Length: 256
Image (cartoon, rainbow, N blue to C red; front, side, top):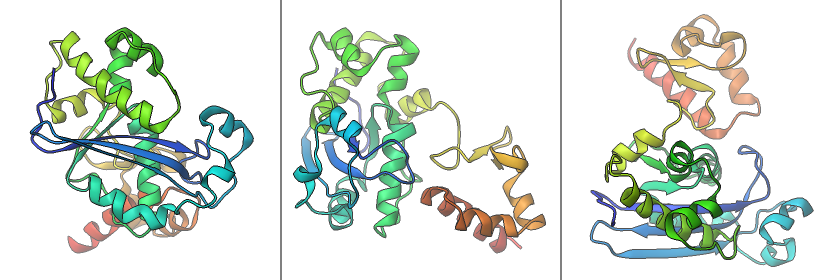
């Protein structure tokens, strides 16, 4: 079953220096862009992370420090990456919790004003876990009858993710072949930022989801305790979280 698309969707996968969104860096990124007419475009880049890749991480994806030493940095690649995804929805495997947040950090760090306002995301892992509770390799075997060769290669994982989603739509007729519907199905929790520090309450208003102000409306804290904004901006929070908080503050100022 082919995907029904109103706009392009970019399936992508990252190999990184680790799993901390605000600290770790991309060492490989692969993007598979699917257009509404069925055309495909793909690109894979190796990336110099400008930091040492730990040995235990190299053991997982096989990308050594020597392999990326002469590759471009993400800042040098940022415009190419953004130009490929800027008009598209996003898809991946565990992408809502890891790949999209980390990609957003890298883009913002490179000076690209990335956000998700005009796009949706489809996390194929969530479809899989809600339906079958398996891993990526098992998902490919279960849905497509294929073995995942070169696991933890960004290109192989990206292609596998795309193939799995198509097979999931064939297997589960209750899933709507529509990216907005799939995005809603794969969203675990509604948050304003990727990291989940700012969530939405039942009325759709932003609230803090951590610390001493957990559950309290963000605009209330910004008004009553303005120093809290400065603390977050200067602390080790993800750049996208800081961007969202700034937008809320500006919105409040503009409504006065």
